Length: 376
Image 1 (cartoon, rainbow, N blue to C red):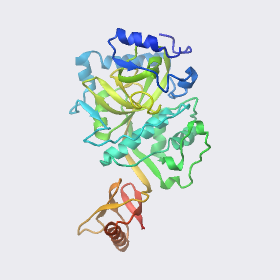
Image 2: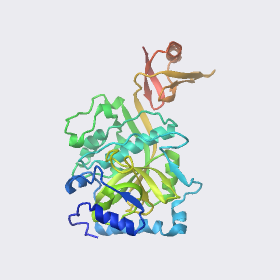
Image 3: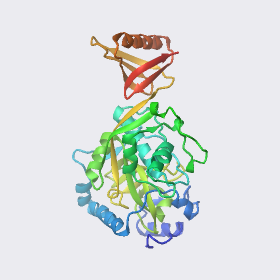
Image 4: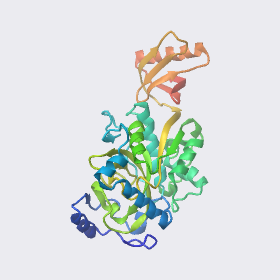
């Protein structure tokens, strides 16, 4: 293996195929959106600064020790009470994972891995697979990341990104659309505080595979970093294990599941749906420091925004003051709140009329509470 500090060789597909055959074909390689790029272009699709070599070797060694042998793997990776498999793309028949994106030639993978995790956690913890949430990687990286010293060439770290998501929040994609290196010159909409996602809680799970499984099953997604070797760029399908090639850099992705039968994590990447298995990949337990570099959980997600034109599908209330709820299409149950009982009843009457007349509504949702409505 080449020294990680030296220039890495380009992807050698023939060598990868030879090594895979020698190891019983654990996964499938092939040309894709990454292998057709030049070496420096591929490296620009990474974006997690590498730790010192001694630390890197230690995190890989620790990860390997967690997965040595079937008995050790069962002990290290199985969480108490956790199911043998979980995939938030098909959890209880619902898909809580947002579409795969493409970060392009910018080391902004941390923004994509973090935003995708927040999107899935928001939908999964609300029990709303139809939740239409598209967060702005541009706001997270070009604003918050820039304020933290991150650039497309330096990359960033998930714990730093989540601190900004906690302290400030990130707006939606339509308020600051992403382009690689912001070549379109998009700017942050001045109304962004009224279209915002925040993470009131987050925590590190690094080095704790059992807790990772438990939190995946409870919240739907995690942020994780791992070391990328040259053979990974040519991944097509199967359970990835590093077989050949030098170290290219560090990368951040969203974990959306696990499979004890195959002994792997299921991850969402940000290299477009033309890479890997529709933009996703499986990576073996203990590979490339996937559990031991930096793993972060998002405990909850608060959302603040106008719903846009939507339909009232259901209403509920009882004899308690201001205990009224509306079920809005793609949003689920939202509480109607107002300090004034008259205003609360006025909103309820408007929504009843909208439901009966099939008229669209636009409501301001402040983390599950409707504080203003428009009926068209």
